[in-house]
Image: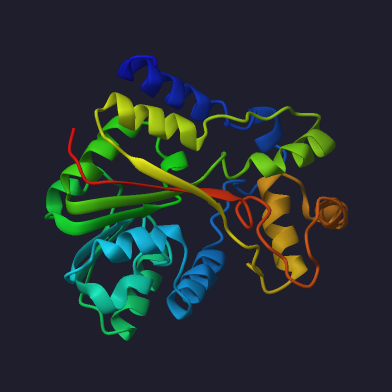
Length: 276
């Protein structure tokens, strides 16, 4: 295995390769980096109503007895809300204040003592005390400087860190559409295996389970999915029909439109208790 600095440099370079060329982004006024808040909220609600899966199980078993939870990059609260009956205090962290507010509102409605913290991890880590369990779901591919991020997760967990990410980059499934519409070859790396190699190089003995999340109706309508995908692909509104045709050809379900980038994909749950 390569040394830690090399692994971290490679991770950063692999993420940088996902940048969209300027000549493409210049063709449209909207940012392609769409954050579909409603999708995250729906997933959180589904998990809250019917908790399950390896990530939930690994976090739940560490909350015996009940304890505090720190949810880093909380999104809609899909990681922490299902743990509500075993949570004595919940700290939510997210850089998107609208998303943070949605998660905090749901947590309080469920009767969970909640502290929301707006900001990026690990920038705000110094403001937050340790928790019994730290959760971090579907965040790591957004973190170029992964070493300090993982170190801060570990140092804040008294019992366990539970992290979840897709096995491959969550937007890699859009690669055929980038080729179709722009003739652009997109990256494949990094992957979950790179995270596990980095943790091992940090002397963190992480365990992992790979599983498949069932596809769900992430969007209320096909039109909503088309709009998000169109923006991700830097295409103008008048090409929505072409995008819909491409999505259907790629396997999107018109009656149950799921997010092509993240729904139904292979997922990896990783967890660890020891400190570097």
